[in-house]
Every structure is written in C-alpha cells, then in structure tokens.
Image 1 (cartoon, helix red, strand yellow):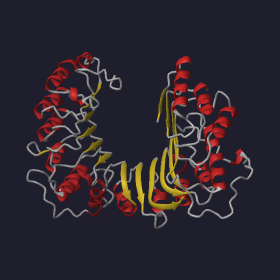
Image 2 (spheres, rainbow, N blue to C red):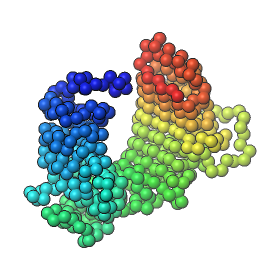
Image 3 (cartoon, rainbow, N blue to C red):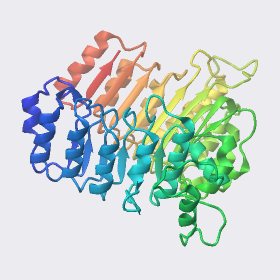
Amino acid sequence: MRKKESMTPPVLRSLLVPLLTELDLSFCPYLVNRSLVQMIIVRCKNLTILNLSRCTEIPAEALVDLVKAFPRLQSLNLSRTQCDTQVLLAVRSYCQRLQDLNISYCERLSPMSLLHLVYDPIAGSHCSQALKTLTTGPQGPGRNRNAVLWSLVFVLLALPNLEGLFHDFHVVAVCLIYYQEFDNTHIPPGFPSLERLARRRRSNPLNESSSELTVGLRLIYELYEDFWPMVYSVCPNMNAASIILSGRSALDQSFWRCSNLTKLSIRSREPMDMREVLPVVTSLKAQLEQLLLGGFSFVDELSFHALLHHCVNLQTLKIVYFSPFVCYPGSPTNATPIRWDLNLLPRGMPNLRGFVLSQADAENSLPYWHGLQLRECLESLLKHSPCLEEVGLSYLSFNLDQTFQNVLAATPGTALRNLRKLTLEKVNVSFNTIQQLLLSDNELSCLKLFLCSEINEEMYDNLLRIVREENLEVDIEWR
C-alpha cells in the first residue's frame, strides 16, 4: 500500500484491530500523531512488537502512555523520536519482557538516560534484565565521549542477558572492561560503582573460578584486528563478528580458535590475498553458517575453489573481490575453454540460501584462468545448492549466458528451483537467458536488472509482457 501511495489516515486506522501483535509504522511516520497513538492504545491490546522509528510527531508524554499500555512488548523501536529519560523510566518499569530496544538518534537522551534504563536508584534494583539487544547512540548533540563510554560499560555489566549492543563505541567499552580500571570513573550518586557491578558479575557461577571479567555479548561488529584478543577474552560466547583488517599482515592465529563463531564477516582495508582467510575457514569448517568477505583477491585461481570446499554448511555467502595483484603475462584471451572436471569442483552447499558475488574493481579484467575457474565454480555452486533463495551477481567480467543455461539444463526441475530473488547488476546476460529464467520452474518473485548493457527498455517491456501473459507473480525492476 505504501508503494502504491494508497496509505491514508482512514486506511491506517482501519488496520488497527485487536488481533494485531506486530505494528510497524516506520514507513508512514507522517501519519502518526498523538491521536493515532491513543487509538493504538485503545484498539491494539495484544502488541508484542512495535516500531515507531522516525515518528517525530509523538510527544514524549504520549510515548510514556504508549509504553505503559503494552507490558507484553518484546521488541520496541523508538529511534529518531522524542524519546527522553521519562520514556525509558516507563520502559524499565512496565516492559519487563522487553528483549529488543532501539533508542538510536534520540536527541533528548543523555548518557545518564542509559543508567536509568538498567538501574533504579530509588529502589536500589537492577532493571530491564530481559534485554538481549540494545541499539543506542549518539546520546545528545553535545555528548561527552567519556561519559558515553562509561555508561556503555555500566550497561554491559548490569545486563546479564545482553547479546548485542549497537553503538559506535561498543568495542572500546568492551576493551575498558578487559583492563578493569574502574577507579577513576564518575558514576552519579545513587548508582552502583563499576567495580561493584564487576564484583556482581564475578559472583556469577560462570565467572567465579576466573579472575577475568566476561560479558554475554554474542555479536561484535566493526572490530579492528588489533582489538580482537581483548574482545574475545571479554566475550568468549561471541558467535558473530565483523572484523576489519589492516591488510598489512596475516590474520592472527587466535582467530582460528574461536570455537563459537557461526557468522563471520572479514573486510580488508587494503587488498589482501584470499589465501590469508583459508586457515580461518578451514578451522571453523562446518560450524560456519554465514560468511562475508570483502577486499580480497584471488591471487591463486584455485583459492575460490578451496574456499567453497571448506564451507559446506553455509546458509549465506557474500564475496566482494578484487582482480589479482599480478596479471600473469601471456595469459590467453581467446583460447579454447578447458572443461574442468566438475567432480573436482565444490559440489555445492546443501544449506545455502543467500549468495552474492561481486567484483569491486570492475574496470580491471580477470586473467583468463582466474575468470575460467571462477565461472566454473559459480556454475557448480548454482547447480548443486538446492536451497538457494536469493542470488546477487554484479560487475562480473565474464558472460553469464552459458553459466545459467548449463545450470538450468544439467538438472531440469531441480537447479534454482527455490530461487525467489535474483539481482543482476552490470553483468553480461542476454534477454533469452532472462526469459528462460522467468519461465523455469522456480519461485522467482523479484528480478532486478540494473545496468545490464544487453537489456534495453524494449526488452524490459517484453519481459513485463511475458509476466502478464504467463500470469507470473514476478516484480521486475530495470534501470
């Protein structure tokens, strides 16, 4: 309805019914005001998920009334609203089941607001203990960096079930916990000191036999490699990490020992050889469910093959690569392609649902053998990954016609059968191949064709005609 611009105040009000358990108003904030909030309070008694992001017309006092009305909330998004400390006081008092809270870009909040969210200085009790994810920051336009950091440390120590803290300073806060230097912090009167919170955490049975102080974070993002040992020491249960490498040295061997990692993102600020990540992937092997790699180059043309070989249980794979540092002189450009033995190639990933492959420097072509190996590995992966639902291919230097035709012809009725979304951006693919994909036995509902030179506006119109004539439920985007 939003896409068709048919969402109006009367229509929105008609959708506010008692059966609602989830309500997302972030896409129509211009329709949300105090009167609508009162209607939500009256009509929607069973809400457990509420998203009011960007609803700036709701006064803070109305947000307080809203929070009080829904004690069963499990997820609440108040980002970019008039949320203030009074709203958080209502959250801590009335939303005992709340597990996910987003209060990012709320300019009326301060570092002190976070302390009030997790501790009641009057009752002397810890609050919001069910929170698993907290998205916050920046706190106030004139925020004090040290005050923000120590408030984040306070939150990490006070919330035993917190698994994700989304803030630009979250890694620094974890490192402060690693050093345990809490003596010079300035916590306001009425709140426990950080050392007292640390002692409380050490009394936890999981920590009582160790002098190390740990927290329950399971997700760390934008983590520079130099901070890895400290963060891993404080967050031993981490199962998802986004790591940024300098590109100057090999990966630290401590990466290999992180036995809980199931989701891993590694991005290098300078192009690195893909072989550098192979020991990590080899070590994690079957436990990896999600892998995102950016800033690497297939210097050895077999690196991509080796990578796929060790990632048999992946559900999501995204690779943004560079062309090799060295283009071997004398590489043939028009040689007869060698048909690799597909038995030697990866046999696909039985659990893979999302796959993205993109070249970051499209202006640099791949050496012949690198392109050939990459194309053959891509074909094998598409053939033998039966659960694939979303595929994105962009800025690839080789033609995709033969790849898709081989995939669809090799195992009719099985390859790409579960495909729902296909994005092709600036790749060489013909109208006939796109038509074949449309008419194949699959679940395709979204097709995006961006900057594909062989698909012009007339062909796009023909694709829309095919969708209409064949009564296909496919949304096609072209530009």
